[in-house]
Amino acid sequence: MLFRVTLAAVVATPAFITTPRAVAAPAAPVIRYAGLASCSQADGGRHPCGPLKLWLSNGRVVPLPAARRTVGEDEYVAAAVVAVSQDGARAAYFDGKGGVLTIWTAATGTAREIPAVTWPGDLQMNALTLSPGGRYVGMRGVDASGREADRVADTVTGKTFTLPRGYQVWDFDPTGTRMMAGDNRTAVLYSTGTWSVRLRRSVYMRGDLAPDGVTVAGTTWTKTGRTVTNKVVTRNLATGKKSTIPIRLKAGETPLRTRWDKAGHLDVLTRSDRTVRGDLRRTHTWYRLDRTTHRLRRLDSFVIPSSVGGYVLPG
Image 1 (cartoon, rainbow, N blue to C red):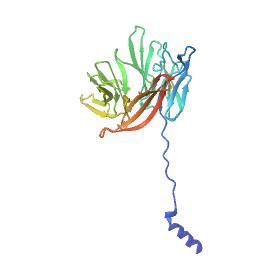
Image 2: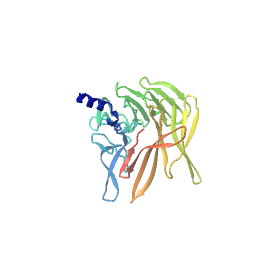
Image 3: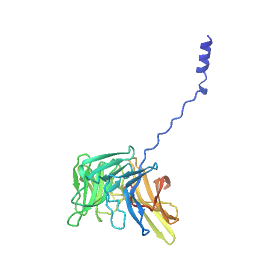
């Protein structure tokens, strides 16, 4: 009887029973930027040294000793051999020995080789573009005749699509199902995989392609006297409709670019510079833009020291 009474008392007093709170899983790291470090020279200057590296949002710095890099005279040229997807989830580079395309994933810290796609021997490479998801890689270079050529490699099928002469790969939408390309006069939207033309528009506006596959966003700023006005500009390539959103930034902060995610959120990347004991500190900040209130919410901020040259940002 005593046992039953005690048990009933326990069941009747749930207010004294506590349950552990759910702990949110830490966000997967993303790549903030890629680049080359530099070393001091005897004459006081600096020269690029060491392998290409990836700087992650969790503070890790990941060297890529196998990545091919080309360095121009008196400069750090990293854009020719590495690309970071808009969402920062992946990086693409070519292996230095076999020239095999490699996709590195930030969430897992693993690299996946694509034997079907190798360094194009007939091009002097100068830029890569990586789609979200890592399936498509745009390769830009100069051929033997001195003309620019742009190709898109499918990392699943190994097939390559060559753009019309004069066209450049600009951007992929967040799902990787649309690609925007063009020249100084025309924007063209392609369906990835089939590479059929979905839309051709005689309007020049580079930027980031939205999930709807037709809206492009970019940043701009104007200065009148001492007043600087920063804006985000969107344009629907199907209708031609254009809208402008003024944004408030700190003094000395300049908008660089925008990006969309799959949910339709629009983010803005800015840069501000300051010198500390002779060292140039380049601060980059990602904001989430509320297109209704025009307010900015800081998502991430990081400093790129002057010792890192030729750095490549997502996009």
